[in-house]
Length: 56
Image: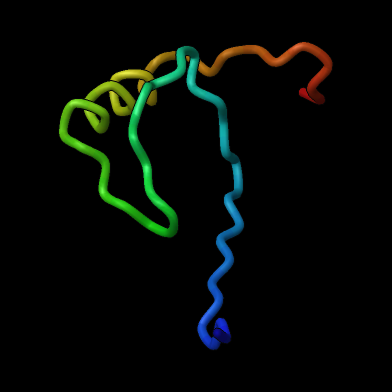
């Protein structure tokens, strides 16, 4: 069982959400349900949370 087509993603300027969003995921890429997507998008437009010890 070979993995002929491996994929890796590098995210730049990633930032944490202020609250966890419960979701049932899956291996690989998956499409979140509309309610999960709404919860994430609402947080995306909130101010970026401060991470203690992170470089500014």
